Image 1 (cartoon, helix red, strand yellow):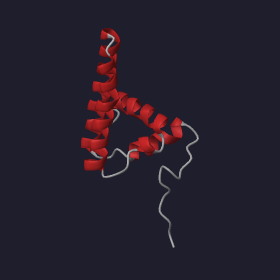
Image 2 (cartoon, helix red, strand yellow; image 1 turned 60 degrees about the horizontal axis):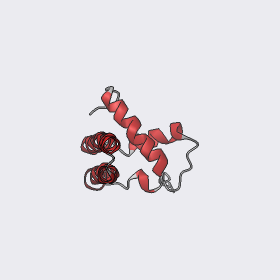
Image 3 (cartoon, helix red, strand yellow; image 1 turned 60 degrees about the vertical axis):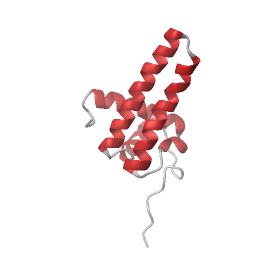
Length: 109
């Protein structure tokens, strides 16, 4: 009898380098990746604007925008549970690394 692979909640990652391949496997859908890219880019701009304008509203809008777009990507297109729920810090780092990798053409946009 074969068992399915452990979910993210059941897995113990030894570090980000161990987590990132799993993270990428959860972002196979192109639309999901594009929504992540848009969310991470928008959140970065909002954070810079919040610092420049000293605006709490812009600061609050950054994570709402980033996670809102990413979670739409997961629930609607990828049809999986975001890694943020089980590994929030690794997932946040994964968002920025995937953003960079997409900018550099290492991952298809």
